[in-house]
Figure 1 (tube, rainbow, N blue to C red):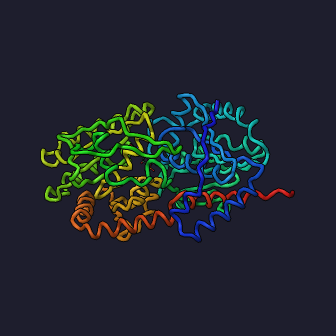
Figure 2 (cartoon, rainbow, N blue to C red):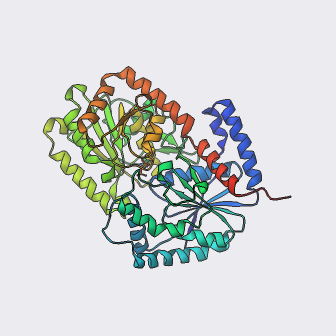
Figure 3 (tube, rainbow, N blue to C red):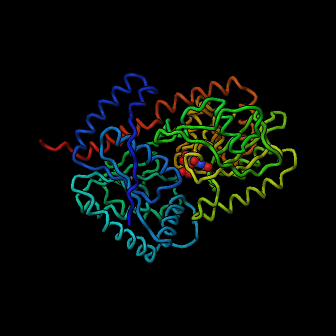
Length: 476
Ligand code: UDP
């Protein structure tokens, strides 16, 4: 049974405080038009998970703000069997050019994929009315598109993933998926280069992701609250008095950090030590080994800097056996480092029972960091980059995927051309540690860049533009 996720509305009024007046005024005009255009329609979002990952991070605020503007936006998560999710994970891996579990996308896979989606469709189709708009996110539910169009809906396929240069594995996966996707009225990608060949260009739109700057992940935290959150979660050692480690939950109620992170380290981190941070899932495409080894070998002791590599606790993502394995291998790699650099490397797994508590830990780490790294080998967009830039941090990141849309090299961050050049990575980090004025200037430009291009208002307007090109105001 597909499940509808209950999303309370959030008022976009609050953007008044972060947008220039004329941008806010333009946004208000556009939302007025949206209310009119979408008056008797529901805008459905359909994806395959309510927990974890970048898509959820994006979807929740967009649906909430759309509801806050008076649009009846909803979010439905499809249901599936373990077999189905093994296949959709395979599609995901193959589309990224990797073979994942090594099994093929064949006719058996198609039978399972279509079977599960047919069951979901039989529940969903009666709830979708002619004239509704459905945004189908990613490959997992793409097999619903045809049936939803038969129900009279306008259907947009929103693909959040992609690679810069598809290899044969990726191309074959796309050939497998394409028949389902082609039925859509429009296709939305995060980057122009992610739009697959063969799609009708007139129906392709590009909407880079955005972050919710008021969420627990990104909301402003006073420096003493940052410190309190880090101490409460065990990420740095406490000294003296702190205010309570409190934050504002999405629903406006106060939250408090109570759980502790799990740390693999020689000794606790002092609050005064400069930290270099990467926040990522435990995934080889985030290059944990390169981040750790490059730091150990090329960020000198004289900087006094410590590396914190933080990811979600792996028990929380029980359906991701790769995560457990990558964490285990990262711990082993750290163990093998010479003792001096090892003492400056800290691996943190952050509790996931309460996603908002987890988010505020990430927020505090990002605000506390002197330099933030995102040394991915591939990246659809890389929300962690925008999150760090919003906090006016200087970011050193690989010149891959959507990271290139975010950082203007030398101005709002530093891009690394060769993801395998650990010396260049270490040198870039060291330079920012040693030149605080330069680091501050880059951080400020980074924040400006996010506020211009990557806050929720922008993607709400972009979606509205796509919808407007597909549906028309009904005659009264
Ligand atoms: N994230 C988190 N807790 C963690 C690790 C990561 O909330 O312990 C978040 C991170 O802040 C970001 C998202 O997970 O918002 C990851 O999105 P990104 O686009 O960077 O990478 P993806 O995981 O989608 O490949």
